[in-house]
Amino acid sequence: MCIRARPVFLSYRGFEVSVFCPNDAQAVREVVAWAASGQAALEIVGGGSKRGVGRPVQTEHTLDLSALAGVIDYAPAELVLTAHAATPLNEIVALLAEHRQMLAFEPPALPGATLGGTMACNAAGSRRLTAGAARDHFLGYKGVNGRGEIYKAGGQVVKNVTGYDLCKLQAGAFGTLSVLTEISVKVLPMPETACTLLLHGLDDVAAVAAMAEALNSPHEVGAAAHLPDEGVTALRLEGPAPSVAFRAMHLDVLLPGEKSRHDGEASQAFWQRIARLAPFAALETHAIWRVSTAPSAGPIVAAACGMPHFFDWGGGLIWLAADCALADGGAARIRAALAPHGGHATLMRAPASLRASVPVFQPLAPPLAGLSRRVKESFDPLRILNPGRMQEGI
Image (cartoon, rainbow, N blue to C red; front, side, top):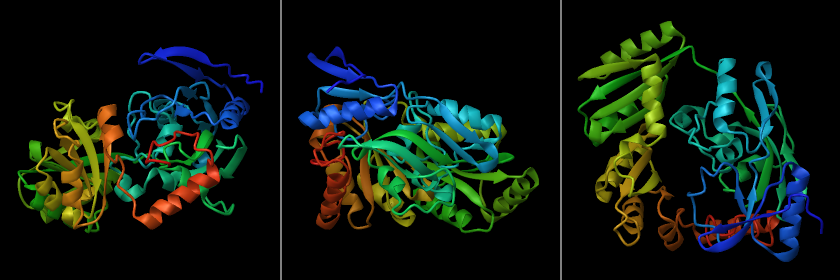
């Protein structure tokens, strides 16, 4: 078989690896078809920012999509943007900002982050609480499945009926189902202004109660987080300036206690710190876990874990820093604390040796595991796309 994307051979950890660098969808198809013909596994890489999330992919072949970059179509009036999968996320954010628009799910713009990696990992930030996850803004895509077939799903309009919603399958599949080559997303207008109301001196229980009261009020709180080590509970308000001022005034009355406030750029900088996990900046050698559970259970789970932590999503998302000296990186302790309350724990940052030895994602119940295997079989029957990244065989 003739492959236009000839591999480059590199030395990696003492082994010779081949890196394929296709520059269009057809070349991607050729590489995947070649891999399928010999059952050779491929690690799918765009900008590399998510490479450390999930179990290490054991393969000597890398499919580097970095050449598939650039915005294909952007219609501000239609609130739709289409771009190649490896388009840098910061370029998309900057382009949207020129038109006072944004990706409403607020994906973390980490160094090297791409649109494809963001959607494949279903990555969303603090605004997910009210705007939804990345999958909720995923309109359509073109990709190559594990058989080496080019196909498309969804479209470029918000109201689109094309049968099964395959976008939601790809979002969160971490590249184990298809190689995404082109993506369409819904964008939204940027708020006119924003402010962040800071409550000081609350413990975890009181902070989660205050966040719940604010979120259940009529004052449209768009994001809520609690940083125990800084003694700060944050509530973000966005919209027209008179509306933000009115709602902030009423929240000030609703929630007694010591307060301060960030406006404009200071408010934006605060939430960017949350996205970068800045509260854990001094814990670079720790394993970082993302735990999702009911907000009311958040303080109980965090206390049972006994680790440095902070809350986002009104208490429903707990970030934990576990000492890597623990044999399992804290996996057993965290999942035991979570078990009575429901939810899931994902290991987001750890050495490759730890990610290879513990379940990185929440173990699935047998019926769900069986369903996941059947979905994988439908898209990638030979298990050549990011094999084992999520769990063994998937």
